Length: 473
Image 1 (cartoon, one colour):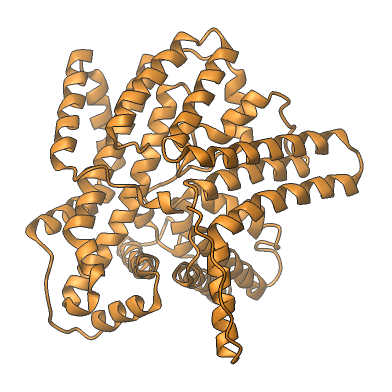
Image 2 (cartoon, helix red, strand yellow):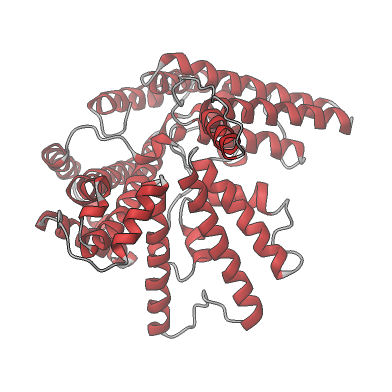
């Protein structure tokens, strides 16, 4: 079930109504939300709900076992069981075929051809997200930073909560579980803000991301070698904004839906294309993943402690793994490696020169220049992310950098949508706050009219229930 589907339009009001009717009955309310979350997930493929339940049972039992034993050895064994179980399932479904193909290619290169054995299993939707979410729980319990919950219903809902189940944000147990202990109180202002955020997310997805995809990005990436360099440059910008508004749109809907239900989820994006460096970009982009990688990979590797060269190495390794997290293809590995190398180079540059690209007191012209350079680095890397396969990557950059004429598939609509997408990122926050206040000041019938009009616009502009890009990860 996708957020931009008629199915969700019917599903969400029913779940919301039931959840608030049961607000004085905590157990029944959680049971309803758990049932709704599994129904939401099973509407994609009911068979794969067993994987979600298996991961939940494994980490619930492991966490309780770690809390009950004082033996360091036993705690480590239980922790290894959690890592092996979760990462093992992730490897089988997401990486096995890629690994088998890579081994076969290496063997062929060494003159010993080897037939790669493949499986035909579907990649479960959201497996990377809920795997990282449950692992954060067992890691925190293992470190002694979190006491495990004994209430299985609470833990199961933490793992499967439908607004953020499929594509995040990746929520920590320490943030979500205490909200289940608090008595829910309906706040009409919070509900209005939540609905507004849902519609903002739908606007980003349908009116910006999807239109950029159909009007510009998809036609160009289908045959980059035939397009002009100017068209390829536009498509590079177009995909940078498409993936941003598609993913941040999903996150907005997730946060808004959770807020309507009485929950707060962490923000996942903070105007990443206004970043003044790649380090600043990763503080603003997919924040729940970047902080996960920081806390559970980068810091255990040593973080920024030690020499600048070691720090650069840690950054490169973490980003390489972050790229692989996105998908089983060398294009994703290359994307992560590029970010890792650029982040490491930036850290070395700062160590040698003492120049901090993220200082708030730098001149406006210098800051704007850094924003432009950072955006182009990010957008260029996203070409690798979108193309994935090396022949397509080579054809794209080869044509782009040759400044050659060719086909132009960019329609006037593509230019307009790209302009709106760019300007929206630069709209002052104060203007957005005023627009929000104006919307909340409207009488309820007027608010309903605004939302109804928005739905009609979405229906007219949308081209079917286009899947969210991050569903594939």
